[in-house]
Image 1 (cartoon, rainbow, N blue to C red):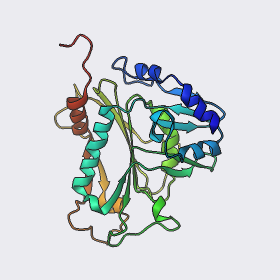
Image 2 (cartoon, rainbow, N blue to C red; image 1 turned 60 degrees about the vertical axis):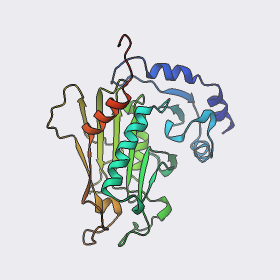
Image 3 (cartoon, rainbow, N blue to C red; image 1 turned 90 degrees about the vertical axis):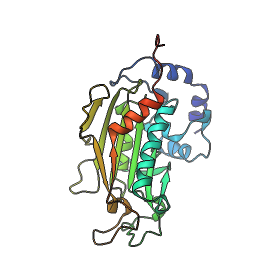
Image 4 (cartoon, helix red, strand yellow; image 1 turned 135 degrees about the horizontal axis):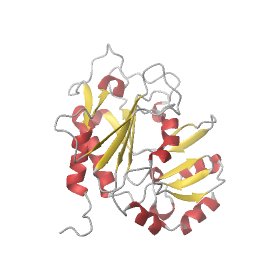
Length: 273
């Protein structure tokens, strides 16, 4: 682990910041920085459990992939956090916040070789123990249970989120995963929605359909909505009523989210007055 910490101490983070903010492209151009190679999984997992990471980084900014450690999101921008705050409010309105434990937490699950790997998403949802009728999946420890996982990307390319998605979808009891990517100038948006709790469950390497839109061309009436069934989010059987004050589903209007982020956090382009 000492070698990984040393590599992080000398990495040129300014170069990554500059690469991530050059222009308004939303393709698979790779702006991630390779920190170190030949990092054993055991080493990565010990690193992931550190209370404080080097250079003020958060675990959600890093990915371990087949022995390589990458910084994939730097800096975590105001637009990134604006998107995070928007969908959190959507969940809080539909499902009273006192009935859930939400936020950023390390998650550990199987990698493609069946070994345990630790990652951190931008958001995870855990039903509160006090929810009437709560059913923790068989063999799952409550403190390790999540039902919803969300990843937000700006400079991060889709390629780099694949190892995390492959692990999350194998976590027992997870119902939904939502991955959202915005372009650097916040005009182009794409997302993938994984309904993990339905059978049959495809291979962990099978990507969900990707939906995309440009804010300048999206019609007034659109179909970019994502639905999270509230009973499944709470881990409740179909015959158990929802707690009072809960909506039947959490409905996220992805275009409304994008418009909010663009309106509040879009960078000023060069030459603009």
